[in-house]
Image (cartoon, rainbow, N blue to C red):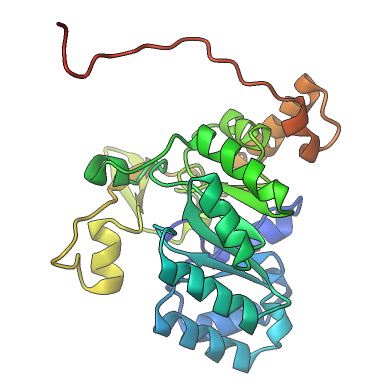
Length: 296
């Protein structure tokens, strides 16, 4: 995402260490990518691509100008992973890059998780509609509760020796702990990281307070910036918001997230993060059944 998957964020995570990694937005120029991937700070960064020809022409161009081993992680990122074309593209990417780690998505069901792993994905990205600036569920009626999706997709992936990345829906450090508890091997954050210096986005001042602009990649803002506007045949599935300016990502935010995870592990008796799912039990504490057709 713009405002989150930035080179500045990747550099901050590299300095922070502790398994942090960043998936770069697709919209950096060739020169910017070559410069970044020529530095050691790119070690933990994912190179993000869609399934358009221009995305892969750029990737080939970057690889031709650097030591190709510098890019060892590729994230194939689309909003809807439920298509034959996406599966076929994943197969071709695996054949082309047999030694690179590939993450692909997004999907929300165990069956499609298994399909993507069999097509060559090492990690399946899970989530349709849970993001704070995503309006897919409102605009299309399509989506899946993120906790349920993570549990079901993790079970399917682990049965085949694969992994899952829970993408979206986290608003506080406790949500990150719950995602790992649900079986996620990676957790992808957007809104929780927006608004920091590393977001590389516009900072505005209103009534003496500072805010950063944050938007979904299917929003009017993103499509106007990168595609010349929303295509006539579709609607925007994202929104643009202002989030409070939060300063440097390493001042407090990462300490809160990582500290929350460590404390969660101590509460449930997990000595390592990978044990968290084995020590976690989810309990439904309340359920309300609504008659959508009204009272008889």
